[in-house]
Each structure stands twice: as C-alpha cells, then as structure tokens.
Amino acid sequence: MKDIFDISKFDSYKEDNRREVKKASGGLPVSLWETYSAFANCYGGVIILGVVENKDGSWRTTGLDAADKGKIIKQFWDAINNHKKVNINILKDDDVETYDVNGDLIIVIYVPMAKREQKPVYINDDGYGDGCFASGNPDGEQGEEKAFQLFGEEITVEHGKVDIH
Image (tube, rainbow, N blue to C red):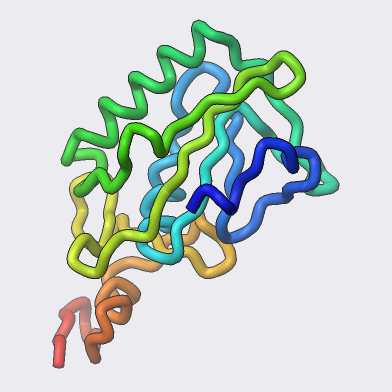
C-alpha cells in the first residue's frame, strides 16, 4: 500500500484513481469521506491533506502547521470511528503519517482496499446511497446498484425496488 506514495517523488505526482489531494485549511475536508469510501471499495489509495492541485495537475502545499496537525488528526480519528459518519474503520494507526514538504506539513492517509466482508464501505449512516466507488474519479457516487455489482450479484432495479437474484 505504501508504495503508491513516496515523499521523495512528491513533485512528480498528479491526482489519479489512487491519489487524491485535499486542501484541509481550517479543518478536515468534508469530501475526504467520499474519497475514503471510494478507495476502500475499490483498490485502495492515498489521501494527502494540506495539498492542492494546480491547473497543470502538479501539486503544491497549503501551509498546514503543527497546530493544524493535532486538530486535523484528532478530527479524523474521531470521525472514522463514528459509525454515523463511516460504517467501518479499516485503518491502523500507522496508516496516517505526516511529512514536512518545504516547511509545510502534509498529512498522508493510506486507505487499503476493504476485504470483501467489509464492503461496502459507506458514509453518513446510509448503507448504499452514500457508498462511493472509484472509476477513475474517487469522488464519484454510484449508490446501491454499484454496491450489489461489487459483490457479484445480479440485480434488477424497477420503480425504486431492488431485486437480487
């Protein structure tokens, strides 16, 4: 998992379906949870806080400092362990790391692929409606039809009713 982000290659990375950057100025970004869900439901990925994407796709840091670090990391662990926010925490303590990049702090969250019995990983206490699945864009919501396909089930959706075969 940790091979998808190497701090020594920071300047060469761009966002893709395994790497997502979030500004995180002022606290934990709300969009982080959709990315967590998408990465967990697919192949895993890394969320980098304290970084923004430039128009050319390159990254730059946003100036997080030590005071931000404690606040953001506490918010993160509190939320990920709250079942009303995320149905399952699949992370270990060492999946969250901090680095100094040119005097600015960044927080790196390694999200592994969830095991079959842990899926779907969903957010906001909604078993399927807020499940996210990465398909080139880690922020794409797909809902319950994609969730059932994830398990290899054949489904039919008619008039809002789901029939599983």
